[in-house]
Length: 102
Image 1 (tube, helix red, strand yellow):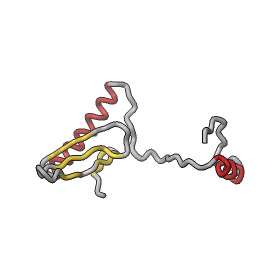
Image 2 (cartoon, rainbow, N blue to C red):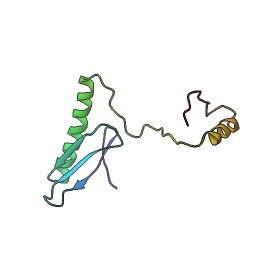
Image 3 (cartoon, rainbow, N blue to C red):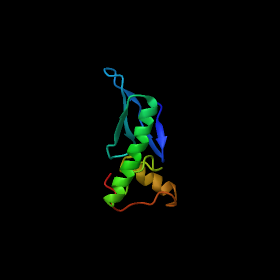
């Protein structure tokens, strides 16, 4: 899939087959931010404007904006495999958390 990219945000490009218009949303964040345009150029302008407005509204609300693809992800495994991995690592890169809920 191709994405629009602006200020580290990625946006989708989708066609409305009934009207011929284009629309999209910011991907990989929890907040819903959408945009639309009649042409690809107008869609890209609307995407950039939506990113700017999203960042402005977060600042006004004193909210930290969601960041896409922060470089971390969680993988759930069974507790015994987690224990073995922590012990095998020598506790260096996988600290054992006391509040692990498995």
